Length: 287
Image 1 (cartoon, rainbow, N blue to C red):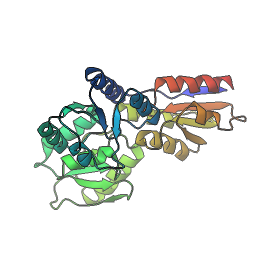
Image 2 (image 1 turned 90 degrees about the vertical axis):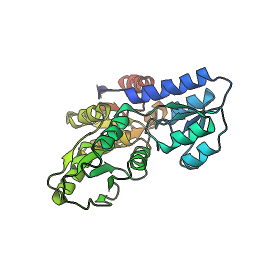
Image 3 (image 1 turned 30 degrees about the horizontal axis):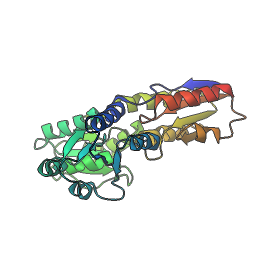
Image 4 (image 1 turned 180 degrees about the vertical axis):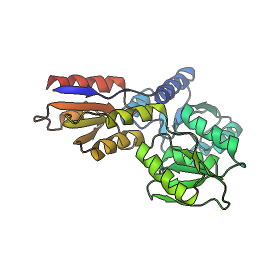
């Protein structure tokens, strides 16, 4: 089988930072409970590996992060998610004597920094997916922002004045999602402008899918169904007419019937390790 590699592959810089920081936190506090406050990244295999190292997940899907944090004791250690978090949690941790490590992605931090710089001067519209950890964190830290929900394809609240809104978006959404929403916003606010867009790791991977040759007869995206950037790669491949599959690992790829396929493309979400990518690449080339 001929395999086209979609670059970049493996963990993005933000994911690498988050994993390294979690391991560092446990290494610096080997005899203390070290908690991951919310899913650190969207990669279950990596989360399982961190669990084996003794890190404890406080899952926001089961218990609100604020409640989980308030249940901890003085001297406990927490690692905040790469997706960002409500900054009020920092104050709770400080008051309880909890030791904190912040793994927030630099692109997520840039979005909030930009919002803080311009709020009061321009209305802010944030484009993202309702319920996604990154969107929820941004909106909690910038309650002045008006939210365009991609799931409902609607602006949930509108700026009252007619000034030009400043648009910031979730870093992992696709180009069509961003500009589809942007064009609808500009129907209401023709002077709207886009500030921060998506992270480079997201943009480059999506562009790689869009540039695939038509001879490719199957696209395999390595990533989790809970990873927004992975599912967007899968959706882009499908929208271009390719047969596409979203798989977590080599075992799921091996379960596919690829016997009639001659030309595959292999892509990965930003939370997929280089090791898994190489394992799958070697397997596909052996077919």
